[in-house]
Amino acid sequence: MTPDTFARDNLPPREQWPDLLEAGLGYPARLNATAELLDRHTDRSRRCLLSPDTSWSYVETAERVERIASVLTRRLGMIPGNRVLLRAPNSPLLAAAILAVIRAGGIAVPTMSMLRAGELRKIIDKARIGLALCDHRLTGALADFSDVRTVAMGSDGADDLTAMMAQAPLPCPAADTAADDVCLIAFTSGTTGEPKGTMHFHRDLLAVCDTYGAHVLRPRPDDLFVGSPPLAFTFGLGGLLLFPLRVGAATLLLEQASPEHLLAAFRTQRPSVCFTAPTAFRAMLGQMQPGDVDALRACVSAGEALPKSVWEAWHARTGIRILDGIGSTEMLHIFIGSPEEAIRPGATGLPVPGYEAKLIDGEGRTLPRGSEGRLAVRGPTGCRYLADARQTVYVEAGWNVTGDTYFQDGDGYFWFRARSDDMIVSSGYNIAGPEVEAALLGHASVAECAVVAAPDAARGHVPRAFVVPRPGITGSDALAHALQEHVKAEIAPYKYPRVVSFVERLPRTESGKLQRFALRAQAEEEAGLPGAPG
Ligand code: 3UK
Image (cartoon, rainbow, N blue to C red; front, side):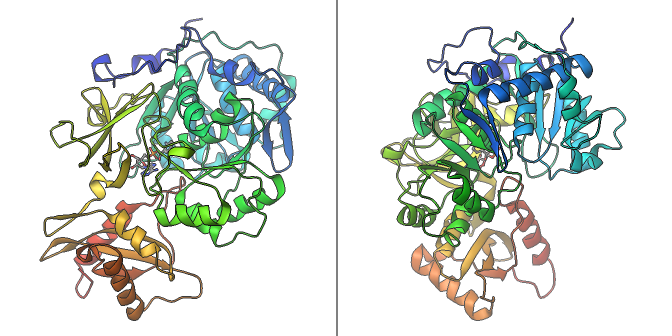
């Protein structure tokens, strides 16, 4: 059988790849990541994939994965190298389906449930997808695509994946793949424009476990993981699937994982490790009951900067020191983040062992410690876009340039300032929106906030705050003024938000990230309107 070489053929030219560091990982040339994750543990009767009402052991999980792999290859005609789209909320079955595609030598393309037909069409065209496994409640968005065979999951129909699994012939051995065969195309949760597909190899799935996992998170076989990020977001794929399985631990996968759902899961299932976004930690603080977090021992925050005030409040309340970490879809997972004993609250942290990080100026020159500049990183994983001219934007001279502006202190710690294009330039001064947000969050009336650049005739731009007041509090001119005074007292007064708007909610992506571009667009639009602020 001739394998499908589409992904390999569409890797960027070698000279555009970032440097890849060996980091002492020493994987063999032939490697199927799922064999390492599922088959190698000594006690395979231990629990592996859980939902609120199911629990599969490693043996049971491996059997289901093997059955799905058999359906894919024998019934649906999937051959190694084919891309398979996955569309479902987090669940054990989705996790097993992702593992099955990879086990069979295919390339998993997990997608966020929130995506609609138009966005899925772009991904399908870009990754040339002919087969999809889709939660039966979400098949509508794929219904019009005659070029994609869609198999439903989770219904009791005769043509549902579960029914096919029951008839699937076994055994179905893992495909003999190369360590550097593409096994995952993760589309960026990007803000605007064409989605970018980032390609990752079998070895990369293990590399994030053996760097961040082994040296920073340090999970144990008796851990139970839980969290909010979808498996289609690599923060979730790593945190809720790869890290636990690498060490023989268990993961509780929740279809719905709002702060309320997470707290409910803490109470009933007693997980020990939680992955979520900064806003969820903040929201949980307001709703927590005594005893809720007694079983928790480690918390990981990523996706956005974790304000120091949230770190401190969580620590005071739970005794847990949240592990902040910056990762990206391009790098697969977290590349800067300190282990518990080395945390500096408010800083993202130190480079993860195996990774190197530095700050560069506009021309790519390395900056000394004590400077602010553009973050550049390299390590065992790195950016390889699927057929995309933006490869040379993310990778400069072998380094991955994430688009973030950071400060590095004298001890080498990295402190997040802002996304480089979110920097607010006001009368020639740089103002980092997140710093103003952190100050606003310290005010008792603020539930959530975002600070973006609004056009201003005199100053070019000024900081404008969008504030969600705490329940029971209504926005008013008096409150806006009080918030401005609060910021002036907390940080350098020139950074205060010149415009304060009260809103009911902030636009966020499914991965929990603030959509600053949407607020910036709103601020731009409203600045042009007569009588509007700005
Ligand atoms: C921002 C952070 C400050 C930063 C991700 C962990 O977020 C992830 O991937 P994305 O591709 O976005 C990457 C960008 O998000 N960011 C992420 N974490 C932090 N900013 N502090 C942080 N702790 O702008 C970065 O360039 O969606 C995070 C693991 C896997 C991921 N894919």
